[in-house]
Image 1: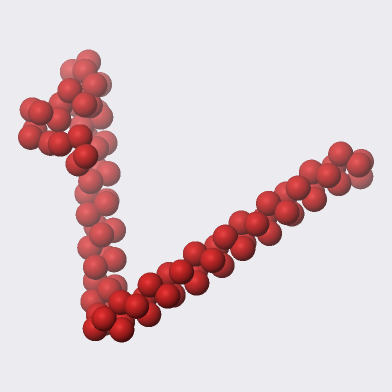
Image 2: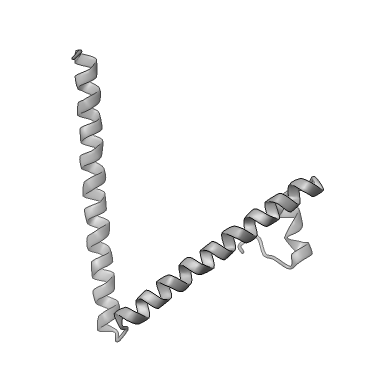
Length: 92
């Protein structure tokens, strides 16, 4: 293998190590956040229900955005131009 190939492999390996470390830190932060919520009286079942509802909300929002995008293409306008017609805020 060439020196350049070894450099790339080393760089990729270092990038993977960095990404693994970042994921470990995120995992630790999430564990701490869960512990905090549990100490405040939330139950795991309640937290799982909220997470499930958030996923459902995001799926519905994504579908709505997709439909708005398709409608905008059909009408030849931007999605942003459709927001007032449907009483949507740009932050929605």
